[in-house]
Length: 101
Image (cartoon, rainbow, N blue to C red):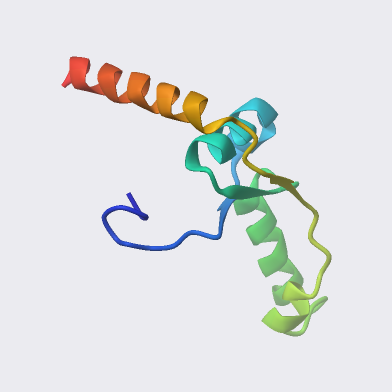
C-alpha cells in the first residue's frame, strides 16, 4: 500500500515485537515485500524503551543522543524468493481475501 497508494519508495523496513522471533516469518515478509527487513535483536521494544527511559531518569545517560549511541544489534533479512513464487503467493492471498469479503 505504501508503494502503490502513497507512492513511497521503500528502501528498508524495520520490525519489532514478538513476531520477530519467527525467522521464517521475517524472511517471508522480506520476500513478499521484496524489501530488506531489519529486525531488532530486542524483540520486546516496548520494554527496551522503558529501560532506556529509566537510564535517562536515573541519570545513567544524560541525553537522547547518548542513548542513540548505545550499541544496537539487528538482523537483516534480504529478499530471496523468486519473483514468480512471490506473485503466486500474492495471488493466492488476494483470492483468499476476496472469498471472505
